[in-house]
Amino acid sequence: MNHSERAHASLSASGASRWLACPPSVRLSEQYEETTSVFAKEGTFMHELSELYLSYELKKMTKAQLNKKLRQMKQNEFYSPEIEQAVKTYVDVVTEKMNEARASSKDPLILIEERVDFSPYVPDGFGTGDVILIYGDRLEVIDLKGGKGVKVSAVENPQMRLYALGALNIFGLLYDTQKILMTIVQPRLDNISTDEMQVDDLLVWAEEVVKPKAELAFKGEGDFIAGDHCRFCKVKATCRARAEENLKLACMDFQKPPLLTDDEVTEVLTSIDQLMSWAKDVQEYAFAMALSQKFKLYSV
Image (cartoon, rainbow, N blue to C red; front, top):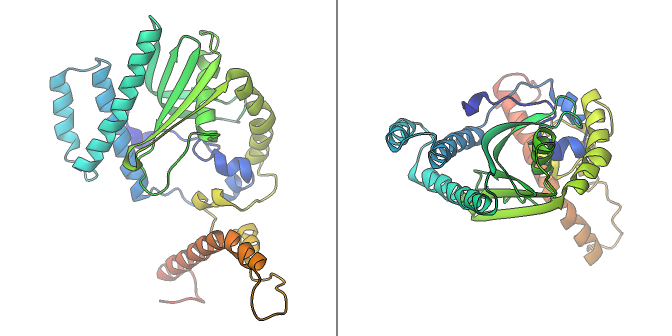
């Protein structure tokens, strides 16, 4: 599979934390061009390398074919021994889980880079599951995270839940699945986390939480809500709702004494990370606009 050509839905699973919290951000973002960061390209390469190793583990290619492909991939600009070791760590985790599935079921379903469909709950909703395992009464989705900046948890992770929902939608009638497992492997931060839930609970979440928010997002309706989810939004620098939320700190009605109270310091501390992040985003946006001569009031 050519990972750089992976199809992405407008209401993607990877963006679910944002459009669930701030539904109208999806349509607002459409005015900006799609861009791919260096980090995203590196992640794509890691997925391609992991797929290669897992294909060999599943006996879809010979050792000679694997080595030939590896020699080609080592010419890629994103290849490094550190990247390869991180991918091998992920592959080891997946291989262990595949062996567990084989041990507990005589005929487990093992899929890599499988398209999943959660469109019954999200308009045009689909995505690609890195690894899907179905065995006994369990369905597990496993996701590789290549980042080394922020740890990503599988617990209550909407992306992982949507992948599981999409797999359940396709294979649910073929298997008596009762339990959902969702695992994130982030090898460069030594981070492995798993969340579990019953199928019925996942379906309730999909019906009561996802479906109404997805309908709003698809129509560009709902309320703009600022928060941690703004980090990956295309309009994070110019969003009025985010600006107003962060400027509340500057408008706080501090008491008259010259020194802040402990309560006031605490109130500032709870907001300061978001404020600094927003200020940095605005500064970078203005700088980029100035470089492209699209921002006349700010020059470099």
